Image (tube, rainbow over all chains, first blue to last red; front, top):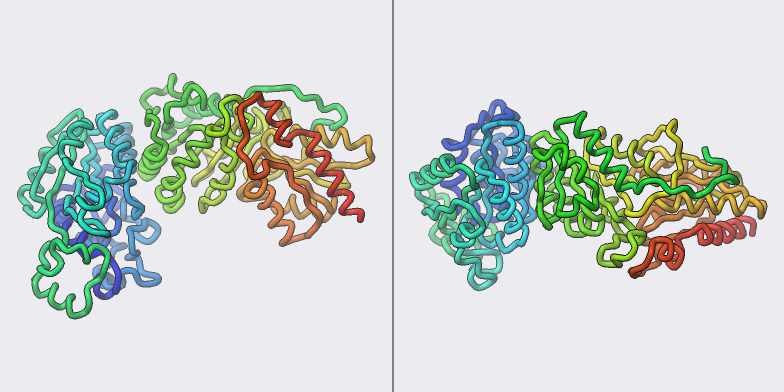
Length: 252
Length: 322
């Protein structure tokens, strides 16, 4: 998709694959044929630049507004597959995102609404480790714990790389789990590429009452493609046609 | 319609008070209304709602950006969130979230800014919003309303909540001069002719409506017949009323408690330029941050009283006759 678009963010999509797949194909109670079902669980991709992984998951899940045969129109004029998720084009998306630091706050609003209505819906918000340099994330961290939103799960895709380089060199965010614990969140650290660990973490979040859960998922940017792994170059640069061929061979 | 010659300034409740009372009423009528506040509920008057409906009152702490995005989440889930703070904070500190989380997906969020303009008084410029109308109008799809008095604020806030889509309502701290009687009807996007006149039109909103009526009364003795329009809706503008004013009176003054180069005035001027070009003058705040003081002192010092409206009217009429 990103190769065809000649622009996009491959690294951050690949680091999130196992988590997004687990959510859409196991953990979340969703009905792609009835996307507005009020009791559904919701996923917000706060790191909106990883849109390709979300689009691919939704297309595979069978939402009517995410046709699988159009995935390669990503970022092209008129495509529903906008550069960042846009509910105007794909109403089945839970939120338009792309400006970093905002998705967790939106998830809190959904969590509050579900509680007011007595609905079982859970809301999952995924953001990047660079993204949490935004102050609003910490406003949301305070608010989520204060309002005891145990129907909200935060997922940090802790791949250690942001656009300009390694997170530790741009603005260190460690110790991440300690920060979330001190803000009052039930906090887990997992290998974000281990499907069993990811599933178990979401189960533990569901069983945790009275406080929201934060899953710090240790991941590898560009996971699965040798020349992209842990390479800051592939935060926001599309692979060349030759690199696409190589990457697809490795991912098979 | 108040007869201009008999208009006396009689103060009624502040528009923020009218908002707070109406919000509590609406809370009884519509269980989907959820209110978010950033530690100013006793000033924004959302406290009336909070006392009656604590479960639907979301305390966000002093965190306006988070508040705006929480409201987006509530709206996605079908609620009608009303978020409130001083205009200076909910618009300036929450602007990016209002843009990306609310305006961009066009969500049904109501933003009510209180303590707008310099009339909030003693707290001074850090709390004074002089640019909220410009910011609100720059949010795509937002309706922007600036009521003049208690009754218009109550009715227009009700209309804002009934409207499907994002709305900004600008309210103020001080007691507001009473302009309207109970039988008056208000409609979003429909200006109100509060004084009839032939020679020139003053288009005003907020506290400047009363000043414009006073100016119209004073100018009558000089033989100048002044029409006064309350342009309570800044976006979308009542283009018909503006075009009629331009063609029937041939001269327009716009008066507002806002930076003069980015508020109601420039928006009206655009419509005039597109329809019936005519001489115009502008009354507003001239590229400055004000200072601490009492409301009346500040409005006087920064050129926002009837005297300043009258000066602008004489000037525009002279240009028209030249």
